Amino acid sequence: MTATLLRNLRVLRRMTAAEIAQQSIYRGAWIIFMAANVCVPIISLLIWRTAIANGAQLPIDERYVTTYFVLLSFVTMATSSWMTGFLANDIRLGKLSRWMVRPASLLLGFIANNLSEKFLKLFALVPMIGVLWWIFRDSMNIPAGPDRWALFAVSIVLGAILVFTIDILIAALAFWMDDVSALAQARLIIASVLSGSVVPLALMPDWSRGFIDNQPFRYTVSFPVEIVAGDLSGQDLLVGLGVQFAYVLGFATVARLVWAAGIRAYSAVGA
Image (cartoon, rainbow, N blue to C red; front, top):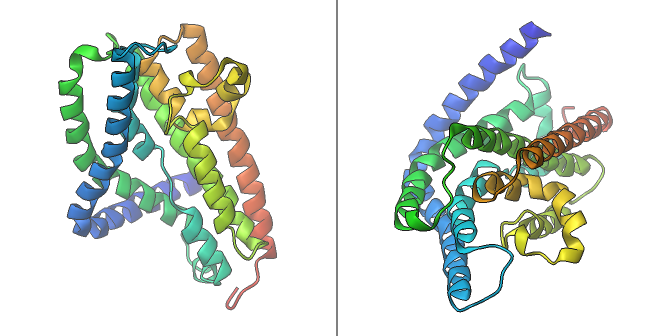
C-alpha cells in the first residue's frame, strides 16, 4: 500500500512537471484569464461598497464585503476543476482505453493538469490581488496571527478536493449516459450561486440559513473566505472544517464507487 502510494506520488510529480513545461507556453493566456477572473469580483466589490455608502442596510459591513471580494478570485481559482467535460468525452469516445493499459491512472493525469495550471495561474493572479489588497488595505479584515491563515490554507485544499471529486462523480456518469454536458452545466450554474461566487452567502435571506450554511457548495468557496473575512468563532471554525471534511470523504467515497462500477461496465474499442 505504502509502496503504491509513493510510486503514484512520484508519477504525479513527474507528470505535473511535464504539464508545467507544456502549459508555460501559454503565459500570455494565463494573464488574460486571471485578469478576467479578477474583473467580476472587482465590479461586485464596487457595487456593494457603493450600496453600503448610500445607506443600504446589510447584515455585513464594508470590511467584510471588501475582504470577501478581494480574496474571492484567488479562492475560486484555487478550488476550481474543469475535468468533467474532458473525462466524459474520453469515456464516450473510447479514449479511456489507452489509459487502461498504461501504468499510470487516468485520474493522475487530470490531477497533474489541475495542479500545473493552478501553479502557473498563481504567477499572474497573486500580483493582481496584491494590488487590490494595497488599494483597499484600510477597509479589510486582516487576521493578526498565523492560525487563521493556516486554517484558510487547509480549507482551500479541502475545497479543491471536494470540487475535484464532484467533477469525477459527474463525469463518471458518462459510463451510462450519452451526454452529461447538461448536468455539468446545471451544476456549474447552481454552484456559482450556492458557493458564494456571485453573492456572499451572508446576504442570503434568514429563512434559507439552515440550508445555505450546510449545503456542500458553501465549502468550495464561501467557507474558506469566511475564515478570513468573517468573525467565525473557534467552535464555528472546527464545526465548519469538520463538515467540509465530511463532505470531502462522502463525495470521494461515492465518486470512487461510481468510477469503479463504471470501469467494470466500460466497453469500447480496445477496452
